[in-house]
Length: 327
Ligand code: TXA
Ligand code: MG
Figure 1: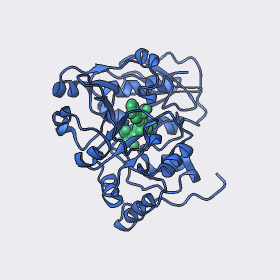
Figure 2: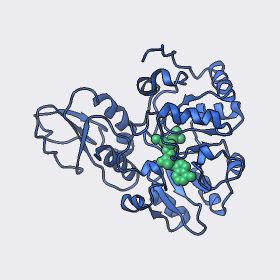
Figure 3: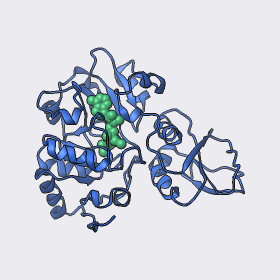
């Protein structure tokens, strides 16, 4: 990067007031959430939102998630749905719902769709900035389009650099994978568009039937959630996957092997890494993107990563890895 990158803002009251002021005056600020870092902009300001797309190199037909503090904020941008009451225990938290939009939401935010994705984040720093800014904030993950999402402030600085001058450093993100996306925009239907920290099993327990939009189905309707693109969340280095509990076929010398949990006899001809001592998938997901970023650029020919049991958060973990591995 040519221009200097300013040091990150802290979470001090002064710096958070600064972040809110920057947002109110149409600038973009990267903020921590409980999932990944988001690149936030005033959702009611199309010029500010346009900068988000430019900074990320994101196609304009990929709509943004609007972040609001509470259900009153949600009602400003979306048509409330009776089913939201059943999800109350999950809010605030890592669940995004797609609803019919209200007219005031800029077309740029929704990519011209008649729906809007809304989320009530739980991260105290994001919530405080929302409160101080006093308006909904549109925020995609703060990474160049298609690359691995950032789970630390340093990731944002490393991959967006001077393109994003303002980053609030709130430490590592709790979940490490992006929010679960649930589409409630069609009456009587609930569709999981993106698996995330809130498992589909939990949603089914609260709502009854929830359809899972499979990768094959999303290819027929790629606009459903462009984050469902086959290749996404990808490091530059080739990623290869192997089933939980097994060993990868390591054919070359410069390989990294990433285990979800401990393996009794790891391969001797590769560098071996571990995502969770206890083999807990939530802990593995928390560390996954950070490790992929650290391994990318170390000159490995292939990064082999162990898949999870697909239950619970394992579905989100496997989903991100499958997309990272897609060519
Ligand atoms: O955890 C998260 O959700 C993070 C943090 C920053 O909140 N945000 C995030 O945003 O992951 P992004 O832009 O990287 O992913 C949002 C996904 C995209 O795949 C987009 O296509 C989809 O949400 N989306 C947004 N609006 C939509 C809509 N109206 N209908 C369907 N999908 C939508
Ligand atoms: Mg993203």
